Length: 391
Image (cartoon, rainbow, N blue to C red; front, top):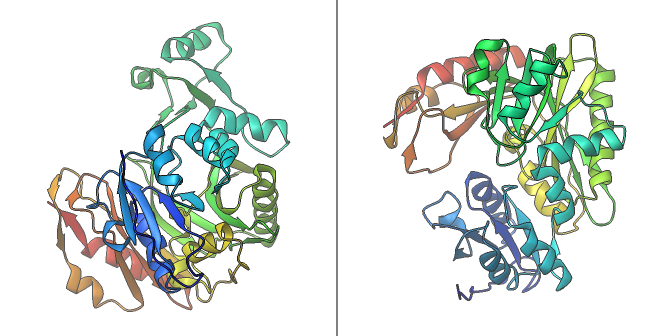
């Protein structure tokens, strides 16, 4: 696919040209952050109708999983970064050989894309994570149960392509076995979880590393999607310090520039275990747009461009609400309760501009900032009850 992009100058002059693989909501929010600096961003994705499309300096229509498309797009850039992990890393490795900077580096991305390789990475480098076993398919899991090498209850995770709760099956008893994913996967014991937490780290080529305050996540149980996020997390200082230390060491171990979001399980016995990571802006950092000195999107740009990293401090406590498509709805998007929700105090609305709603699809988020976190939670739950996204 031959396309020549129109290269525009911005804050940093005609160079470097920064390309983004993926044009979803994370790309849109990256473009918003870049616009404050008059910094043009270039996108590769299948359609300009995607959320970042209207905000691109120029758009390359193609598939970020396709070798030739990624190569053709990347050869017109000086730096490439991502807003989704599932991109063609063979093309990224070739682009690196040709002198184009790729963040996160493709070798780390290959590990992170495969949840089995992720777990092996943590195990080999003594990062705390739960025990696990790797299986080729559902039949192998059933055989392991029969011979006693695997026990119920457990969690099965697809090794590739999983996101937003997809590719995860919680098997509490034998009745859950028909729902096993028939694909290469890992199984780990069902951890006795007290809280699910996250820390986002950022690094630049100069070696500067910063971390955001730890956040606490509350999940929508049927889809295993984050429903609410609270910052600061209700944990003691030792747990937060340990999480920040692990995130900082992990981003250096992966040799990643830009963001690395690290999700943790805090067990009821007080252990902090790495669940998984994402080398890009992440749902656990959306509240930083409104609640922190520097947003995660601005910080990611600073990291990949090797600029000084901004202040990550919390300005006011914040609650983030994921705004999801109503169950049972599919079709052109309709918003209900918008005016009523915006009458609530201290609320910031971010709609992603997706044309079609689907059941439990991420359609936007809202952030409530307040000096009192408990009051912010009350407002957030009211907002969720009022605002509905239907078809």
